[in-house]
Amino acid sequence: MNDLTGQMEQLANLLKTVRGAIEPLARDHRLRQWQKVNYDKHIDLLAEYGFTPDLKKSCALARKTIKQILFELDKLENEYGDLALDVSRQAIQPRAALTRTSQITREAELLEKPLLELQDHCRQLFAADEHARRLLTLGGLLPAAKRATPGDKESLEQGLRFFLLVTRDTPEAKGKSLAGFLEQAVSLERRLQALEFEQLPPMAVNILDGLRHTGLLACDRIKDYLDDFRRRPPGEINTLIQFRQQLNTLRQGEVSLLIEQLPALATRYGNILLDLANRASGQRQLEILPAFLGKIKLLLSTLEQGLLAELRTQWTTPGSPINPERVAAEHAAEFFTGIKGAVLTFKMLLQSLSGRKAISSAELHALGVEVLSNCPSHAAGSELEQTKLRQFLEERLFDFSRPFPFDLLFDYLKKIITIYGGRLEQAIHGHSVHEQNTGSGGAEGSRETTLARLAAKLEIWSERY
Image (cartoon, rainbow, N blue to C red; front, top):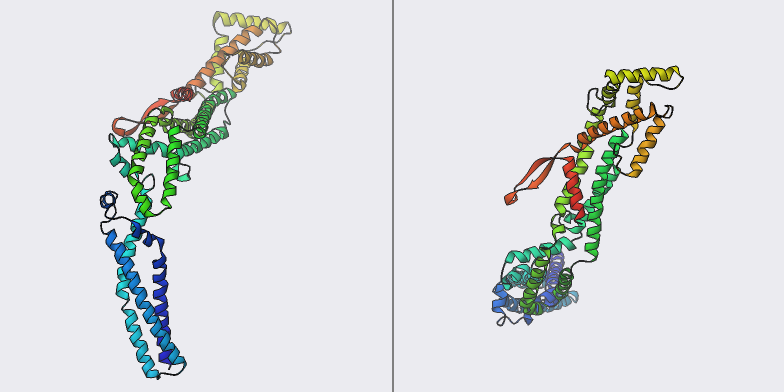
């Protein structure tokens, strides 16, 4: 009796499993939709768009096999139901019931072959459904658009690349989308703002700030341009966005409708991409964005990594051209050299004897070091800069009488400030950098330039935006 109960439970589970697999397939829209396709009418179209040639056969066999399995399953379930009723009423001997159970089980096992055949048919129809849905995407429809569009096929790819460049807005699209370019510009801007020019004279900081400002201005121009471009994209971009929405809507429909519309959609898509390619050819600002960002990044990395450490070393190294001690010593000695120096020494002596402040060579050297170490700027081009420089020097020469030696010392300090500032500019602007460039045939390489030339390029390119 235990054997009978166990075998009947196994049989019930087997029949339940078969029905659980076959009924969803009988109702599956992905299978039923293929019955509406006019295969004879669209035989060439189906082949052109990559559908397998035996879809019609698979559709018919799937439908037939489902009906066959359901018919056999109904019969087996009825037989099992009658047997279970007889067993519960004890209207059949256990041995006979066991024999009948085995017989029904063997008949149920015969469903394995049609089930495997149905699996193959369904797999093919499901794959065809997925293929049809993929065709109604910008990438999936591109080959058909190329076939439907005469002329240069590369133009269609160029149009699609332009569209994706403008519309992509995902993290993995960095460097391949306007959103990615904008993120790069924001990141570079933050890093430039965070730069600290510590342990350097204000004059050097002022020059470095000028370079920082060049980079920040370039970032601002890129951000403004991209913000404006993304808010107001070309009309061709909106046209393809609408077309993509149309594809998304059609992709939800039945495959019979999709197949009929594929040729017209491919032609329409090709025309849109050609329009986008024509639009893209005039967007020079977009083409140079990667290179523009690369130059800003090079400026930033030069300031971050090598230049600042080099300047700090040179500033404190005796004998360095930008060491304030050296510059001040060179020119303090000159100040009191020769006949002119002798006259100045004599006049300074008279100044001191009369109780007014004079200055010696050592004191002039110390004053020069202090001025060079603290002067904010050597460039006095604008009226404001001239005023600031004059105020700075007047504070240092407050105790000296006018016109002598005040005017003489004033001119002397302006001279060494100019000389020292020029050396700082040479050390900073003349700093060597290796700029990446793409040669003929797309071969990449690098060429040596200077920080000044790099900054000049950034200024020129910024004007284009």
